[in-house]
Length: 78
Image (cartoon, rainbow, N blue to C red):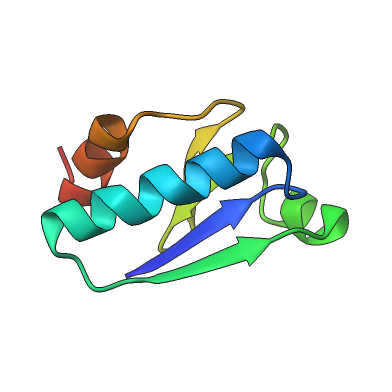
């Protein structure tokens, strides 16, 4: 599973990264977490607001920092 954190590296982006890592660990999911920080790259992926979370190339959350439980639900496919 490929998880991408789209954002410039602000505190909210770091919080999203931490929550995503914790959710993946909680579920025992093997994943690759990539930080995408370039504005052109973020825009080319379709994110209009940051931070954003992309799961396997699909933006699932944009413009907010979801909780660890919310991310776990997304990762589990609920």
